[in-house]
Amino acid sequence: MRNQLSIPVTVLALLALAACGTEPGSGSGDGGGSVKTDLPLTGVHWSVDSVTVGGKRSAAPAGAHVEITDKGRAQGNYGCNHFGADVKVDGDTVTVSPAEMTEMACAKDIQGFEDELRAAFSGKLKAKIADGKLTLTTEKGDSIALTSERPAALVGTKWWVNSLLSDGTASSLPAGTDKKAYLTFGKDGSVQGSLGCNTFHSTAKITGANITFGRLATTRKQCPGPEMNVERELLKVLDGTVTYKLQHRGLSLTAPNGKGLAATAAQK
Picture 1 (cartoon, rainbow, N blue to C red):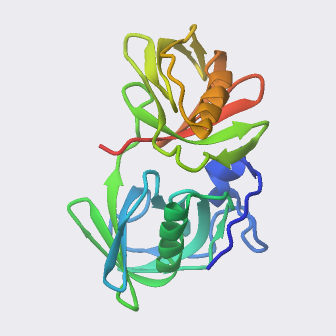
Picture 2: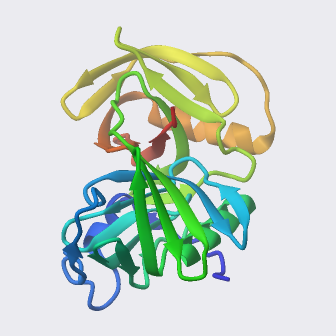
């Protein structure tokens, strides 16, 4: 089992690791494999639903996904860490080369799922697609269940905060704070959500690649230390004008002070 490493990960690595590659021979990220298939497999955002290993099914955490490009490259998220790998697609057979990945420390349960998904999404897999569902089956009979998902819109989507950014590096949320903080932008120029402990509402003016937040109105609860730590960090982000980046079902906000957040769209 891979050891957990708590090292900084650049935003570029988090949001586009698979496109740039980190190992010798990965080149420009165009992939070293080939694609020859009639299956509607490539160019689709496949959200991971579950992994079944040895007959035991494990549900995927929010944000786990896989995308396969028509240039023979797979990229995605194991549930916490992002990854990239060369792939070869021939008919209904998908061969996945060893992957490179970020090395954020993750919650224990998510780490266990990551290890299962990483082991299953490797080597030679058989692909079966029906009604927008994809099943990848290993030679041992283990399987990954996935569902095709459309890109999420900035407005109207519930964005779960899954990591904090600081001066171009990212860190996972403290243990016990997963699925605590979120934000939703309204069509009326409002924003509301949770800071990890207290709920909030404010205004949010979206202009080009920027979002300008008005003064936040929040509740005044006292919560356990980790939740309050997340809240204090988010208050440094949701203050004034920030830059946002929207990539399919992922969102990042970065303030001029270098503080930021990364979030994933809630599954419907």
